Image: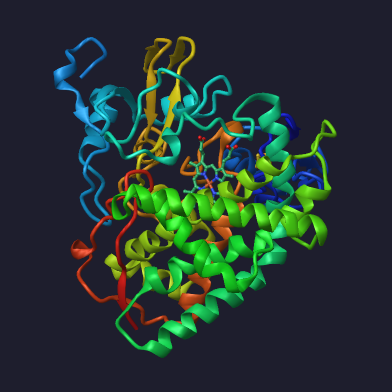
Length: 64
Length: 408
Ligand code: HEM
Ligand code: SF4
């Protein structure tokens, strides 16, 4: 699994953090997404896909 | 009802609401047969209504297009004389409405709405909701859940966010009400309330400049955007007002509609009482299932745009119905039924893309907290009238129910 986030598109909704808080975080200064790991363990796949699906900015791409 | 048919055949928009649960039947008809439909707005102006998920999502997220009011030549929403906050072309906003400037403005606000902030804020919102439920219970059943909880909670939360003292909450609630419940107030009352709120905010900003606190406005005053620019007083006042207008009536109405959806067929409520862990997905499903969403979003097209259902020409005023899109069965399995376990739920009730709702995490938190508190405190909650008797509000922009009478 490989994850790419687009910080320019991100609107800081926090939806990804709610879905997978060991993979996604938000910057303190503006809430923009930061990736904690770009290759998380396979058991997090469902949560990561959930995050990508509910992102209002479509700023998360997951490649399996 | 396609682009080429005569204007006389245009449908009136918005369609009259049916009740708390049933959406207007036109949504499904249009989605299936006429995804790009001519409509006539209350002003008499023509617009193009989109109802399919793919079309709506693409257009509302397109950074090139703004909300109609900013553009000369866009259709007006309101009837003659009834100006709405979105129709005010006379007053250019001190906040950039699109592009890089808009993004820098948003990103000064968004640190106040992160998942971590919401977790930290949750106990305060819980305390406010509990206090309001206590007061409602003390007055005895039946009670109007909208007036007792749905109305005050979001305005208390916004006052907290802006550092407005508790003693001014009621004035805030009144000002906010005049802006969006257009049919209930005379133009003179609306103008007076606008002026009062602006004056209050200006005073509040000055007070925070002298003595900054731990709140969003103080932070905007002392901070700067990513380009190092500071917000001027006018932009600060507009931001404070904007948060109140964007975050109050929307959330108030959603709380009322949420409880009506859950209680009209009490099995949904009982499912939540039995399993409060469903509250998160339940809130998303309720946001998706809203049959009284109000107007939707307008986008004024400054150039041609190609959508899945066809090309819309430059000059079009498009009205995007997120609520109709949220019931698109090409995207949502069994779209017409309320499924509190639905996941992932890709509804677009908060919009999508660069202009989507800044306060969505806060709105979600408020709705979740309301359910947590009510499930715990009043598990026997029930509607005091049949759900068919819950009357939709008459306001034009934000849909909701006038009252939600309950017993427990
Ligand atoms: C259930 C409640 C709510 C709903 C359904 C809702 C819905 C929306 C929608 C659809 C938009 C997008 C407008 C567009 O794309 O043109 C929006 C924008 C916005 N909302 Fe919300 N909202 C809610 C609650 C809140 C709250 C609680 C706040 C903050 C206190 C808030 C603040 C904002 C702001 C500031 C914008 C403008 C964003 C921009 O221009 O970039 N909203 N909201
Ligand atoms: S869900 Fe999307 S928009 Fe929201 S914080 Fe994560 S990346 Fe940003």
